[in-house]
Amino acid sequence: MSDLTGKVTVVTGAGSGIGSAVAEALARAGASVVATDRNGPSAEAVRDRILAAGGEAIAVTMDVTDRSSVVAGLAAAVDRYGQLDVLFNNAGILRENPFLEVTEDDWRQLMTVNGLGTLICTQEAAKIMIAQGRGGKIVNTTSITARQANANFAHYAASKAVVSSLIQSGARALAPHGITVMGFAPGIVQTEMWEGVQTDPSARRQKMDDYAKKILVGRVSTPEDLTPIAVFLAGPGSDYMTGQVVMVDGGMVLV
Ligand code: NAD
Image (cartoon, rainbow, N blue to C red):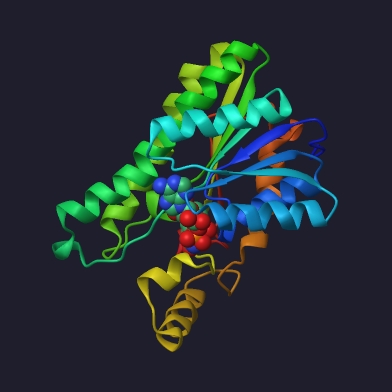
């Protein structure tokens, strides 16, 4: 159900955190991985780890907010492997600001990377999949914040609600072409993303401890907690699913 042998998967934001863990897990499942990131060296490091482990991968510098960069990145994938089967829309950014202090600039940045970036990559990958004529899968990393209010992440939550909405509209629009669109929603994952919002390591640890108390399984997650569902959604086991978001949040959404 999770054998990805012969499948070509493109992962955005593959240079760090969830994206790098997903890229490596897809490769272990047999996929050829196109690790893309706006930070090219970080994508190359992931490619090198996959190759060192006996997997197959290339690295591409790609900014999801720039359509010409996305078109070139996906073309590089098809040039190298001859096809595109799965797109993981994972690139994203986080800001933390009290509700009354969210600026137009914060709003635009989050909507541009998380929302518009997802739209552009989905459109361009879908065009390739439609031309290939044998379907495909698009999997998005959304967030618990799309469903659970948080006073300090209004702009981030709104951008992830856009991603969740695109999963539903994309599923409807692309179904006639045999393309499914799905997502998984992490809760709190220990990645570099949190270093951006809390630079002081001890304050960051305290923040994670506070979050852990609100999570039913009693801890925040690692990127590796998410890889089984990512591989499942990319593989044949998810063939009868589309338009759905799977919560992988340790039960946090219930609290
Ligand atoms: P991360 O910061 O570790 O990794 C994000 C990656 O995206 C980085 O490599 C970065 O260079 C890349 N990126 C950012 N903007 C880009 C752009 N315009 N084009 C291409 N690449 C770009 O973060 P992460 O925690 O691994 O987050 C991955 C995804 O998971 C994001 O969509 C995030 O919103 C989502 N998420 C994270 C958490 C969490 O707690 N960490 C929780 C829920 C959802």
